[in-house]
Length: 134
Image (cartoon, rainbow, N blue to C red; front, side):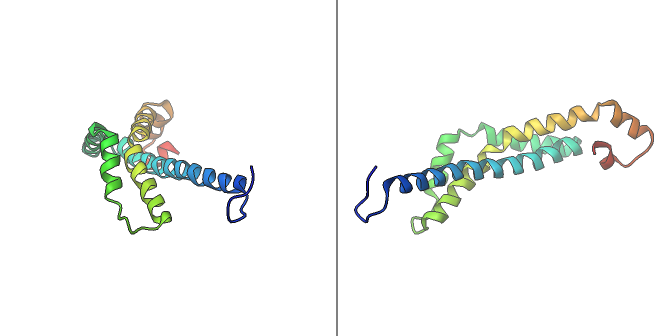
């Protein structure tokens, strides 16, 4: 590929940029997954009023169009930030919007586990509720 003006190999710079861009997606998905699993688990495990409140918050977040939300949040990033700070700001913005789908899936799995035979058997033996799912 050749050399750039400073004598740096172009191929190496290209791979570094690709790795940086790839890490944005991977870290964003990891944060979204963590938030979605925790909130969905709480929603499905607790049930009742807690489940209803969490589901209404998820519906509200999902009802906001994502593109204008990303644009508004990215404008909120200060222009004085370094590249690394801007990078983590973008990752955080993507993570705050992307967790809702996984939270619903995890909640559904918890609700389906409540109806399983081994959970019913554990409840008839009067075991603590937290041990039923383990």
